[in-house]
Length: 100
Image (tube, rainbow, N blue to C red; front, side, top):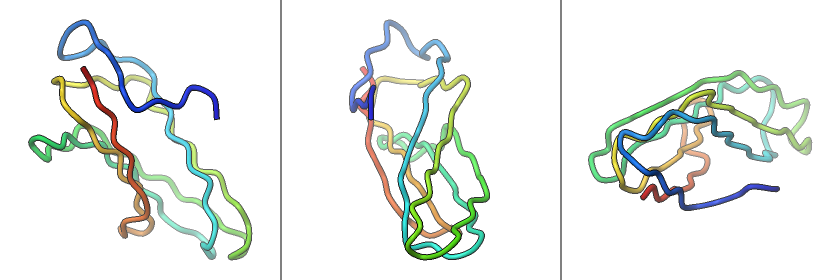
């Protein structure tokens, strides 16, 4: 992957909206699965963005790529944000992003 990062510097808050992509390579699923992505502030637990997308797994061994592109994502304050990936409402993975 190119462009992976865990810290983002912003000159002012709320930040200027900018594009941001989230990518995951997934295995072990079967059939159609509703994938959800939730972005929340860790200091307040406030959800700032979310998205759902139906993903089809041809079989349990198949590697399926999940890609979500936020066209404009703005961060309201300098803090740590958590990106949580859900499969049919169940926790699957998470990643933190420090915004300064």
